[in-house]
Length: 155
Ligand code: FES
Image (cartoon, rainbow, N blue to C red; front, side, top):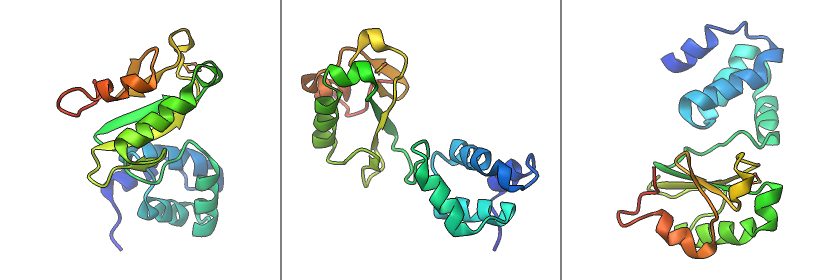
């Protein structure tokens, strides 16, 4: 099986030992935006760690995602400050608006939705990050506004 040149480029700066597993998975996710089965299999081959173990470790950590992110990415903060100011209701409003649950991407890959820990803007809570832009003082009623007229989240 021919390997992906982007994976080869990542692997070229590692030794392939087990201790590098998490760092390798992080680098693969940075490069591709998520961990595909093929990406994790390649990491398993490179490190000599059984595929099942690699999958198990990757699924243990919340930082890893297994579906591609959408062109518009929504991250609802569920840190403490946002949580006490209604993050759960905001998440539900996004789920309803987009028709997906947290951790999912719409079938057309236009939107993806996830929750994150504190995004460092607690004074503006509750917050949501859309395409790396902080949406402050969110309410469920503002969810539709976030997507604007053309349906794209504010950049
Ligand atoms: S808890 Fe949401 S920004 Fe800090």
